[in-house]
Image 1 (cartoon, rainbow, N blue to C red):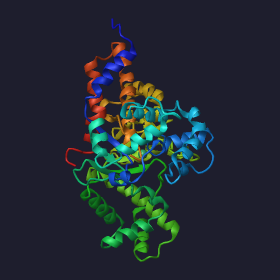
Image 2: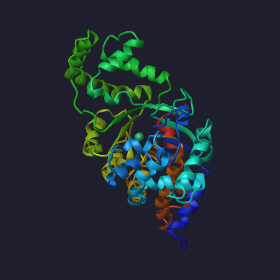
Image 3: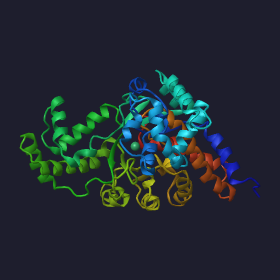
Length: 415
Ligand SMILES: [Zn+2]
């Protein structure tokens, strides 16, 4: 009988995990030059973005962006944020900030006495080479799949998951204008999508990004050709531009497997306040998943709050992968508990275990990765403790989730 408890097994597993290579399957990072140009402090790099959303929910009035406006002195911004910190300090996002402060900057607690010292340390480290030092050195991240300005091109350390199809439901006109500024006119809408995907591949893009709110209906091919002619002649109406845009989104999803580009889909919870997350219910995607069986769908964010529904989807459809991006910091407890349900339902080669999902700089990814290791180790430790799995198998699963599965799905060995 195993006399250890779940926490001690989890600690041992997490220690072993820390030595394994990691693929960071999703970030929104700016280029390092841009990150270095901006002032790094506790509100621009740690309690930023998601934690500001939590603070707004807790009651923070006014313009949220003012907290990150470095033309306003830090003590003034801290004083605005401080009344809400006590309310949000136990949230998952805040924990990622606290772990980063403690383990990357040696600041045990973020409070009135430490925020200036911590901010000075953040700024001191905010210099060329910080991406390699933090993401490569401290985190052990081998490649980054980014959706921000940071892009190292084909075979580079940071490669892109392309978001340009996402907004086409709102019209196709500006995409057409930028296409025509650089390329000849294609003969029809289908050829346009093919050429578009070819160009993306040549630029080193490894996947396409959509949101689960995408339009599920689109016009017939003959109608798309008619609308395309109107577009080419600059005669297209606004609603027709939206119809053609929806058709192009569907066509890109249809053609994606020919280019070995998986389709990543944002599902569930929204980063900002006041959105209607019901529009991002992953169950909406089922007809699309059934129709395009060769397209590989990488469903993001555990579909929170539809983590059970999304697990059943990954159980039923061979073309669905589940990605834990953002889950670790949205709710560590939710993630830990859903993972054992997922393991009951979903094959081990279909789960992607980690992504930082940060926007402002590389620092907080360190804390998120610590949480990812903790959450996954705790979930696996339950099975080890019950004698359903040994540590060797637990680490094998970890290797798949953190490294092998994203490499395989996004064909990273060739890109
Ligand atoms: Zn994201």
